[in-house]
Length: 115
Image 1: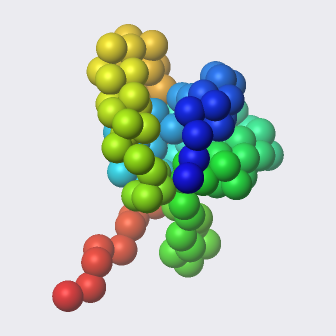
Image 2 (image 1 turned 30 degrees about the vertical axis):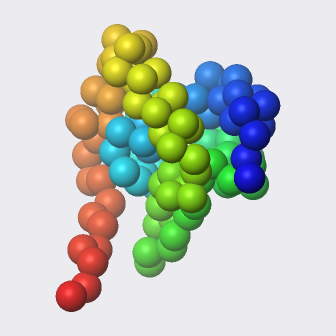
């Protein structure tokens, strides 16, 4: 069971918070999408994603050459609520990141679920 202390420590870094809020908003994102949205390097983004994954906030899945990150569905509802409220109340703070993501050329195409 993840504790409030673990959640808030994980989200105390700006890169991790922005990435988590974007992932929560989009459903899932790959490293290249986060690099574009956050305007940062692959090693830095990957390091932060690895920390979020090891803390239990994110899960990953591989599709071909891409690794996609999504919120862990086993997170307590209060964590999802905190992320929803934070994203909604701070849309202006995320506007540049969301805009870069929406304008990204050659975004990877996710495979649709079978059957």
